[in-house]
Structures are given as C-alpha cells and as structure tokens.
Image (tube, rainbow, N blue to C red; front, side, top):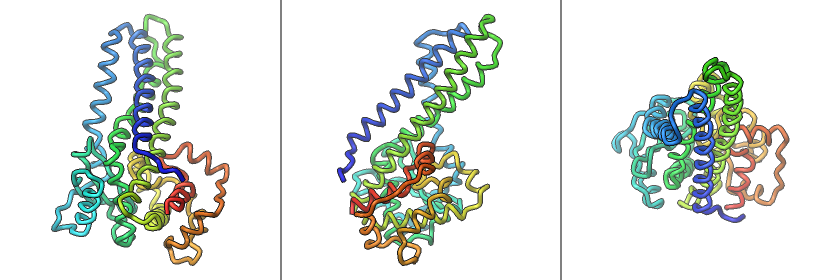
Length: 322
C-alpha cells in the first residue's frame, strides 16, 4: 500500500479550511445584507473573530468536558517516559501529559500548536492495554500533534454550529425590511451549508485518523499493537454507559475511535481474534493482510456520518503496513 504523505494531509486540511471559510463568508455576507448592516470587510472580520475565539477557547472546552488533570513525572512516570520517547522520535516538544477522569477507555490529543500540545489518557484505558498497545495509542496521538491536525479540527468544528445558528436566526425572522422570503432563502442556504460543513468536518476527521495510524507505525510501534489496542478500545466503548457516552460525544473527534459506533464494530473485530484471547496478534493481523474484507452497506453509510474511518478498513491498512 502506498504510504500517505504528510504533504498530502496538509493540502487536504488547508483545502477544507478554505472551503469552509468561503461558505461561511458567503452566508454571513447574505445575512448582513438582509439585516442591512456592515460590509464585506466587517463580515470577514466577524468570521475571523468567531474562528479565533474557537481556536483560543477550544482547548479549555476539551479540558472541562473531559475533566482533564495534568500529572507530573512523579505521579505517572511510565506515561511520561513513553510520551517523552515518542516526542523525541517525532521531533516535537514534549506535550503536557494528563489523565481524564472518564471511565470510557480512550486517549486524545489537543492544543493550538506543537508547542501547546497536550496528550491525555482516560482513567478507563489505564490497566486495559499492555505497555506496547498503550505506546502505540500514544504514538497515534502524538502524530496528531506532529501533523498539527488537532488544531485544525478545533477550528473547523465551530463552522457547522455557526451555520446552524444562522439557520435558526433567519428562517423564522420577520425583519429585513419586510423581505421575509429572502430571509427564509438565507435560512435554507444556511441549513444546506450546515449539512455540507458537517460532512466536510467529518471527512477531515476520518482522513487524519489514517495519517495518525501510519504516524504511530513510523514512530516504531508495530501495527499489530495498534490494531490490538483498537480492538480493546472498541470493546470498552461498547460496554460503556450510554449516558456517559452522550456526555462526551461532542469531543469524540479527538478520540482514537468513534465511541458511538463501537457497538456495531464488535462483530467485525471479533472475526480477527481467531484464538479468542481478546487481542490481535501479529499472526492474526498478517492473515488480514491478504484476506478480502467485506463491508456491508449499513457500515458504509455509517462511515460517512462518523468522525472515524470504518474500523475494518482502518485495521486492513494497518495489516498492509505490517
């Protein structure tokens, strides 16, 4: 399989940002015209202010939602040791290390830049993965920081919400000098923009997961370790309390796997665990390398609406990298 280049990822991310901002600018300009205020420069400034606020406050929102507590080297020496080793290999500053007081097993990275990187594991992942699996997951997360894509997701995730707010604000509005039909037209356009923006954000989120998987392998982690970790995380997410999942669903794009789809992915994953030991071995992943994977229509549709790629496609790529 051809390796994915960081340059291609960067181009895709910048194109997605440009498209989303262009759509947002067009809609905000239409809203300004409808309410008879401002001009092109004011609208552009308004977009910049909104996105900048998301960029600045985004990390704080993730910290509060995930109940993150940063830990010292004395508190979590093994965690710090793995993160430091991976950061050196990745050529990035060592990120802050934290533990999220959430029982759903997972890990995530966020921040505004490489220098501001933070990598966290949830309370639920500790004790679930062995050392090799945990290091593979951390390598995946540090690759997000290395690629700067966690900052991109923080930025663009605000755009669909802005479109939805514009939709609600204009579709039923009676203002605009009595031209209510024009306001409804803007509302319809904003809703269409919301759908398009949401799909673009989801697409970017899925693409970056493939790059992060490959990045973990490039940092020296065996593909089967990451595949086995994903298997255990899917099982752990599927067993999680539904209310607990809903509580943190808003930030699931930052996770290693889509916690909402875990229940549908177990059956596919269990087919790989041929000896039933609850993990994916090197030989089991090697078998998948030459096997033909089948993905049903339901899974294909589900993937389009997911923050993460279909798990079988993802593990198939890991097998091809082994």
